[in-house]
Length: 147
Figure 1 (tube, helix red, strand yellow):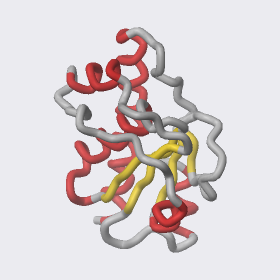
Figure 2: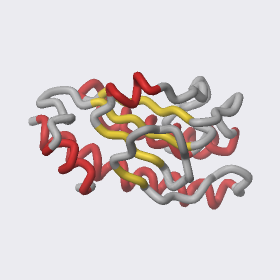
Figure 3: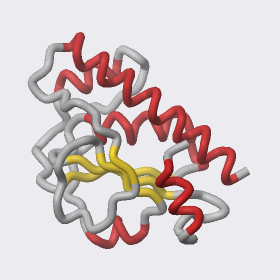
Figure 4: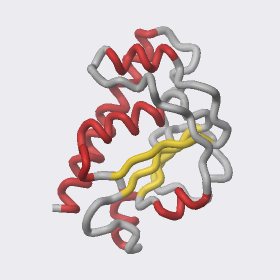
């Protein structure tokens, strides 16, 4: 369970019911989109989840869409979004994805993950699997805390 999860609980930011998790990276076209999709996949309606970027690009990386489709998760309609202070303030957990982001205001955890941009599909699959593992741990922790 991430240390940030315990800090959020201790500070009273974690709700006793439906938590809200925000994943943040620079462009919101790869890692944060995969993390959002996986948490939604694993947690369903029991968790609110969003992703955003400090300098979002036009669209999710095509290779990310392909890698997620291979595991039955469709992110083709996902749109990169600009992070706003209101969404950070609303979040119970703010998780960055290993990129040097500024202007987020608060970061509860950083997942130090490689950027899939410009990588071959084989490398994006590895990154996808790293994200899946971290999100599974997070989903399990959230389930335990809200049960």
